[in-house]
Image (cartoon, rainbow, N blue to C red; front, side, top):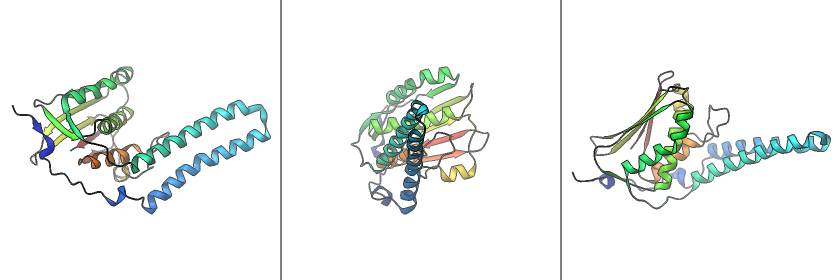
Length: 228
């Protein structure tokens, strides 16, 4: 059987305006998110001056807030990063490496991660580092959305448009319509310690490689993530 090369897919290489500059809403969100830990830092510095007996505790909290700012800024830089160089990536061997990365995590949480290997040898034209980041973000989201005994399945399908469709399906808590509508807005998050940058970065990385993402979910019925 001849290898399936996804170079057949019609790819639009035109840069979207969001890749060239930040809109006002996104810029305002960034300022707001960075200001929060800065306010906390200033508050702890003031407390340390007033009461030196708790300095050790305050220093630890200061370190946590600094790391949070670094994470926020790292995500912002990722959104602004230029496209990485693309190369052919063989899907089956690539996905096996991704699944292996989560072997310990799913075992500890008693989650079943199933990979339905493609019957064809197929290739994606993309950047392996960027694609790895995409799948790590998505599968980690699925793991976090589930309690013990959950199931995540990764499957391949060839669409009528000759695209390769990769589906990551979980049996987690699912999402509301409001959550779905805001998923790709930078800094929007429903997680207690989330930054709201994971899926916006995923979307940008995929668009840079000529791909796209579609997410379908319902509260209490899990989530399906389709990557084309």
